[in-house]
Length: 328
Ligand SMILES: O=C(O)C1=N[C@H](C(=O)O)C[C@H](O)C1
Image 1 (cartoon, protein in one colour):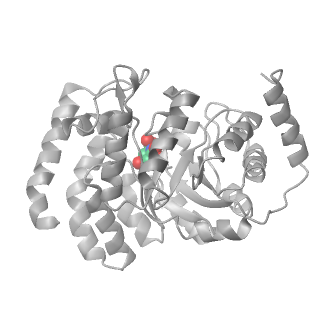
Image 2 (image 1 turned 120 degrees about the vertical axis):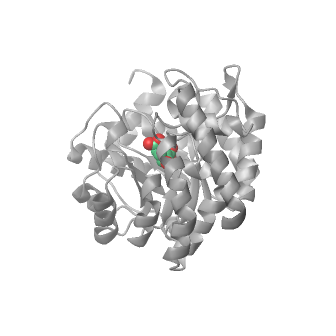
C-alpha cells in the first residue's frame, strides 16, 4: 500500500511527526470548541435506496434532527455504516449535513481505518470541510498495544487542526482505550473528548474523574447514570427517535432535575434495549422506515432485523407515542 505516492507522503509525515508535538495557533480555538461538545449528538444513519445513497432522505432526516433541537450530528460513524461507504459517498454525506446545519450545529466526522498513515491522509483531506472534528476509535481487528495506540492517536492529532473525540468501543474494535492511555492522550491539545461505549459505567466515571476530557455517553441505556456522574451528554443512536424527548432529558439532567428526567427516560428504556438487540443500526433503520423517514435498507454484511423484532419495535414505539401527549 505504501508504494502509492500519496501513501509515501503520508508515511513520511508520520516519521516527521513522530518527533514533534507542538500545538499550533489554533489551540485556543479548539479549547473554545470543547464547550460545544455537550448535549445530545446524533450519529446519523445513512439512508440507502435501491443500493445507492438516498440523499433526499438524508437531507430530510438531518433537517428533522436539527428542528428537534439536537446539539450536534455525527457523520459516517458505526450507526452511519461507515464501513460500507465509498469516499465519494462520505463526502456527499458531509456536504449534505453541513448544508442542513449551516454552521449552527457542529458536525463530527467518523475517521476510520486500519493504519496510521492512511488515517492521517484521510484526516488531511476531510479537514478541508467545515466540520467540527473527528470521532476516532482504535483500528478494528488490529489489536494494537496501548503504547501503539498512544503513538497512533497522537500522530493523527498532530496532523490535524481540528478537535478529536476518542471512541472507546472494545466490543467493536477488539481493544479498549485504557484509563492510563486516556490520561496520556488527554495531554494532546487537539484531543478534547471521549465517547465512552464500553458499556461500563465504571470506565465512564473513571474517565470523568481522572482526565480533563469531555466524556459523552456512548451507551444509550446509561444516559441518565452517565449524566449523573458528570458526562457532558451523549452520542446517541436512539436519539433519532423522538429526538426532542432526548434533548429535554439532557436539559433536565443538566439543570439537576433528575426526577423529571427519569420520568421522561423510563418509558424509553424498553425501546433502547430493542434498538440494540440486533446490531445497530438495523433495528433503528427498521423503526425509521416505519416512520417513513428512510427505506429499511442496509448494506451487507448488515441485514434487516427479524420480523419478530420489527413487530416488537413498532408496538413499543406506538405505545410511547400514545403516552407521549402527557409526557411532552
Ligand atoms: O455510531 C455511533 O456513534 C453509535 N454507535 C454505537 C454502536 O452502534 O455501537 C451506539 C451509540 O448509540 C452511538
